[in-house]
Amino acid sequence: MNFEDNISILLIEDDDIDAECVRRSLPKCTALHRASTLQSALAVLSDMPLDLILLDPGLPDSSGVDSFLRIRESSPELPIVVLTGFQDKELAVQIIRLGAQDYLLKDQLDERAMQALRFAVERGRLLRKLEDEQAQREQLASKLREQEQSLAHLGRVALMGELVAEITHEVSQPLNVISALVGALEVSHQQSVVDTAQNAILIKNLSDANLHAGAILQRLREFIRDKTTTFDTFDIKELIISTIDFVDSERRRRKITIKHDFTNGRLFALGNTTQIQQVIVNLLRNAFDAMMNLPESNRLVTVRAYQQDSTVCVEVIDQGSGLELETAAAFSAFKTTKSEGLGMGLAICSRILHNHHGRITHLPSDRPGSTFRFELPSS
Image 1 (cartoon, rainbow, N blue to C red):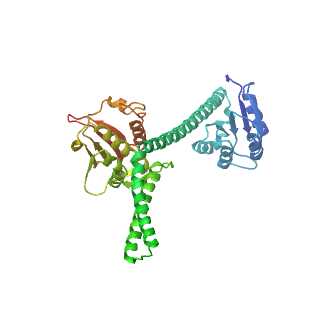
Image 2 (image 1 turned 135 degrees about the vertical axis):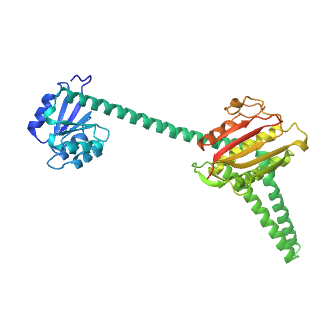
């Protein structure tokens, strides 16, 4: 047997004669270390780099399958070859089924047996290499998921920056109401005129305005918060309606009409509601932008939601000028036809849907405008 590299083998064998036969059968380049008990073998394994373990499972302090399991638990990365007599072949086969690389008969330590050892070492090295590569892939995949989650969060932050004027206006309305109601209560107090019924109405309106402002802020917190991506079952129709409400201030300012066309019944999808809402907001705002050159009466966005086999589909349809970029380019980062913005919206949408095992597409049409459809697994 010709080993290309020096290899280090631990022989776990309590019989001196058998151990000497193994030593003589191995090439001189082999570094052989011997342990005669399970406990001494475990000590060697914890203290010495090795390439292969030769195990006689019949030891003074352990026997049979238990010997193999204890050794494998200590060094799961090392290949183990069982040394056995002819009468113990059945035990050797049983241990192989549990994960040993091979078995050798003690009275047949010939060239073929040595080649089996060489193959066991090479298989062990390949397995360790594959395990290392798999660990690296999993680490890279984990980092990629973190980066994609950060990208989605940054996309939400960017949207908040673009919507700041609408947000300020929307929050200022209930705050102005609160200010006026507080002023009315102060006047009533200063004039020492106590109209219990009128004050009750003022206080009720004050409470309603406060709840309105709180609801606005809560929607903003839900939209922008950075959290671990969790998938839950949700009704896509309810999410669409709440998202339309979320952009209502901008819709009114731009004089745009939104209508929705839903199939009957609830449409349950599986996903992260914060990220799917981000997709819907991006598509709605793109539709708004596409129609700003149209007369106000023609600025219509239609949002459709329906079930198709095991998929929930959502379409956002506008009446604008159509998609100016090539379809593939539209979903690439930093591609935009707008004078402002980085062109990240559709790229982020595409990544979000990909991570949801869904997809987003642009549907070609002969009519004016654009139709974007995204799909999610139904639940």
